[in-house]
Image 1 (cartoon, rainbow, N blue to C red):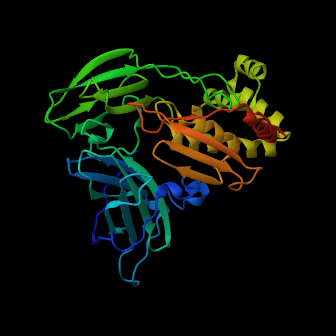
Image 2: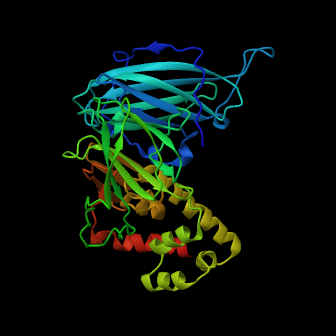
Image 3: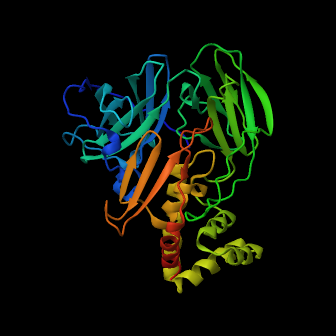
Length: 413
């Protein structure tokens, strides 16, 4: 899929730092971030430290999700988009180091995407929290997102840029096998990058009531090689499934990780993948029986027909479950596919939380009302991982067992 840069016909930058009363993001309910139904459109982003003082945010919007209007019958159609950002020092701070609004006018064309970029003042030597709000001014609808800006040094993942061979930004670190791409490093000039290649098989997340200790991922590469750079950039072809960790510093292990697969990630496009995910809803013996069937599609169909009791009900359950699985891949993928993670498991079984609090080192999900004794709260602790900034472990407890079984039973009635 290609992304095309839009023509910015009008750009107005307004500094707003002194114009509003900011509050700590960690005190806000951010549940809308994981609720697909509350997002009127789905922007894509790539954050890149293009210099020691500037961080650039590249964004892309689907043309079909935007409203195009014109001033009169003889004028051209335009989509009017505003991008508003605040740069905080952290989730827990109300201090803002930079903020602005940028206005764009995108003309209607045959291109599928509207693309642009904004430059943010973010000096190297510190980490930040970026709040970004993109608004379709013609519809009056907006989407708000938050990103960790990791800039203690110019060695981390956000100091790399990946594009297709035409120079269009790629907005995901999950890429298809054998697709050529261009990689550029914006740190100091280096002759080559060290690449560690991994091809592990990860199990799905254990139930929330499990008392088994988390198994840490051991950073033992299957192979190590180097990629030569010319002016800090190169074209690469990644021909094996797995993930590749590009580094300039092999001591700190900081760098960019690209995940290569041969399917339609984040979608669940194969019966094998669909069958694997129903392990969350089945007993081990039951799953093993389904898994023995040679026809995996028939195995999936039989499971959901048994759960739904009718073809119509089974289709509804399939649509709901695999939509959540796809959303889990989008929201929670780290070095593991999102649906296999702790947050992905809870999301697929229970759906998006009613209340979500995020901090620098934790996420708290509440199903129900805050401080209600009938509500259920899950805490996810952030893991320091050189391969991903999106790795969280659930604080498990036996108290979750009854609630989890009840939720699984709801899927199977």
